[in-house]
Image (cartoon, rainbow, N blue to C red; front, side):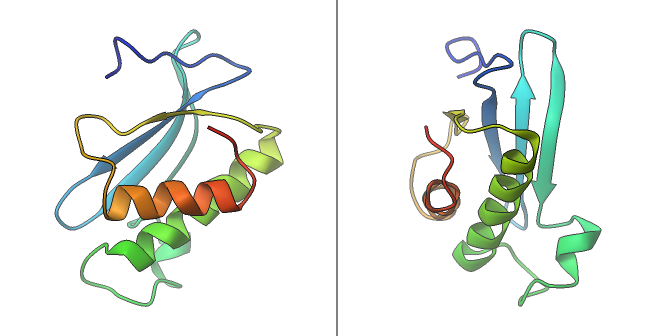
Length: 107
């Protein structure tokens, strides 16, 4: 997906990586090749507030989506390009995307 989707400073790319246990989100500016923001289910600040310790499920994806959206708003990012990688837009990835949209980030 990265070859087709490129973010810039006005509209960066929101990349989601999902493993079996965790979920990771990064806001990337592809032109300057920098990671602007990141959040995951293993971030120390979020890990203590997460209701479940073992696996990332849809509920944890919603919390991570809200966290990355709040960080993006603080940086002044209002719209992003959503990059789900090679995963289907379903389950945890869909829950994360919906929570980011609910916080006011457009894509």
